[in-house]
Amino acid sequence: MAVITITKENFEAEVLKSAQPVLLDFWAAWCGPCRMLSPIVDEVAEERTDVKVGKVNVDEQPDLAAEFGVMSIPTLLLFENGKLVRQAVGARPKSGVLELLG
Image (cartoon, rainbow, N blue to C red; front, side, top):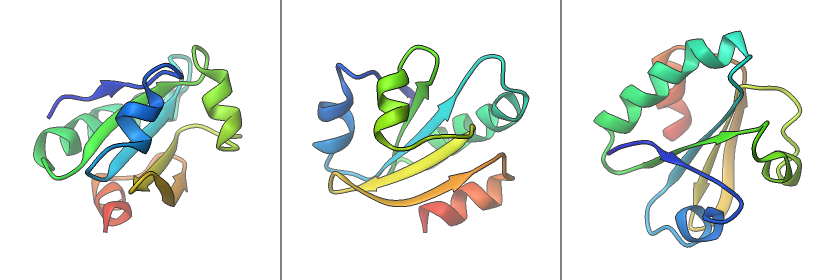
């Protein structure tokens, strides 16, 4: 499944009302660790059809970052049934991303 760009406008429909778990990657173009994590998140999106994967650019969506207390990037948030259930801060290997998914 392709990665979805998450904005304040589509957050409710794509994340809160999603029937499947949603992994969000909070990132920025200037962030080195974000650029390292991005292809891993893309791979997970292609391989795990049971999880919706979205990316939130914190420079373009500062309200979403603030709403979830994102202070450092990259930050990964996992939502299930519209609720935040897990989070991880910092770049991690693919195994770490898959571990977050459970």
